Length: 351
Image (cartoon, rainbow, N blue to C red; front, side, top):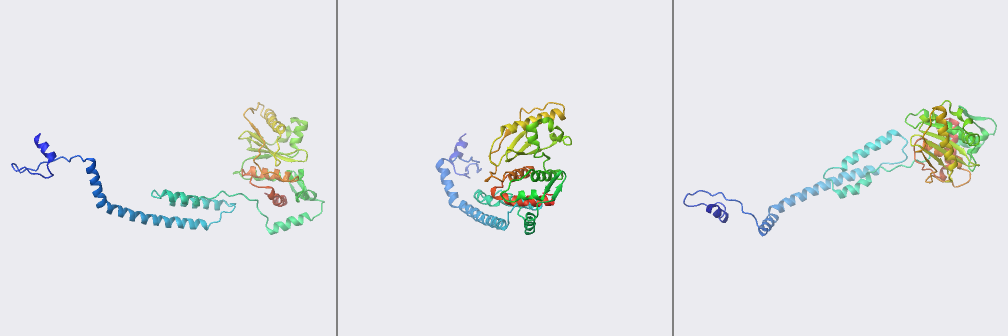
């Protein structure tokens, strides 16, 4: 016991003369002041060397990262993010983004560098602009508008456009049934040949007026060759007292919408189309159709018409974008270009 007490008060390595044996001593606990002095000692000697080496390493690493990030930024500045119409090009952009994120996601990347640089690597969302016509296409459209008004210009399935009809696509002119029915036939054809697109069915411009005025019995045979309940979207071009709107029946999401370029509302037609679904299911499937969880709406956050004659063009543009599940990011300023593009579509019988 006495030896242990002596060990606590004697220096390290003390030898007792009587047996010349080295006494194993325990490391004394450090008081706060001793710990402070010890820390200060290391801070002014060995620790200063370590800190210096760490600082130099960090500076070298930071400089290397800065050079790598600058090279990535320079590479991005050389890219052009225009409208993406080529699938292969989009895949290249995605691969590029993957590589960029891999570069900047190193474990020791400084958070400040990451925050500053990440925004420069984000591929921006691209607004889908209306495809401009080539010089040759513009000349063709101009020549068509100069032709006479007699004879047939284009035929596709049950749709026909005569020369007098194509004049409806000139600026400041109302579209007629023939133009809209022909265009919607092209929409249906495009969807039927592209399995990656939603399955759609387009009704005639005369469908809703017949349903409204004469009831379901007069339109029940209009779908004898098609099962509308297997489709993703049903498109119904509707004429309301010299104003065209688009009815869209979203079968998967159980929603009926009326897209009106004047932002009007039509609860009557919404309910009319919902009732049509119930009657059609009962007639074709022989069972009731539950529509209690369906939604009826008139979207207001859509492009708005700025005149009294472009409603038919808006109706066609709504259907074209929705049929591809693309945003409605066109405006009134695009209407004349869309009109001319529709002339080319009708002449080529292809969208």
